[in-house]
Image 1 (cartoon, one colour):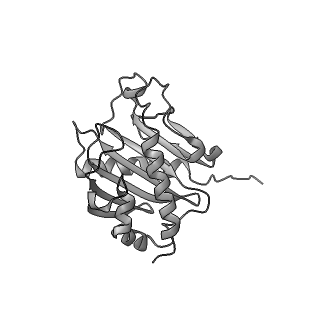
Image 2 (tube, one colour):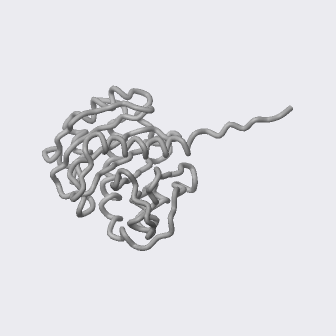
Image 3 (cartoon, helix red, strand yellow):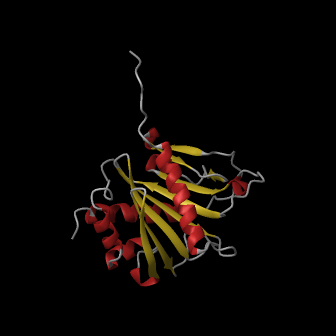
Amino acid sequence: MFGFVSKYIVFGATLLVAGCAELGSLGAPTPPTPAIALFGGDVIAAVPEGYCIETKASKPRTGFAVMVACEVIAGVNDRPRLNGFAIVQVGEAGSAAVASDPNAFQAFLGTTAGENLLSVNGNAGTVTVSGFKQTSGAVTVQFTDEAAPPVSGLQTTEWRAFVDVKGRLTTIAVRGLAGMPLSASEGQALLESVLRSMLAINQPQVVSIET
């Protein structure tokens, strides 16, 4: 259908397996960590204000990072304005698929195949898409997934961004807590704050040479 579909199917399956398999150790005491190097430093995952990397659940060698409020894992009294949970998954080198045709990528996410990939259990029947937005080179989507969340205690609504970072397809997924769910505007704001942090730290470095 689209050139990136087969490549993204593999990436999406990897995201689901990684996201569900590595979250059991959340909440263990961890020093405050604002960023983590993924794939040996090719890409850096950086958090927005009030958040820390959950290093024990993250898997930097496979491009997987977990972000939670610092007060949860670092014992600091620094609750962020928007309290939620974020997962970042960076794809393999050369997996970029958004920038070349963001409209086509967005259209794909609205298909049954795309909704299969949005679902935690790979079942489009549990997913209801609320809307899309394109911002900062990313395609973002808000949806509800009635399947069991990847972490117990999270709300069923999710905000997810797809963006190319250094030639790698990168996914950012955000949810709030079931007891304190994020509104549509709050979830989008938190998603975009993580997106901005990721894009800012991974910008090409400009080196000036004095002559």
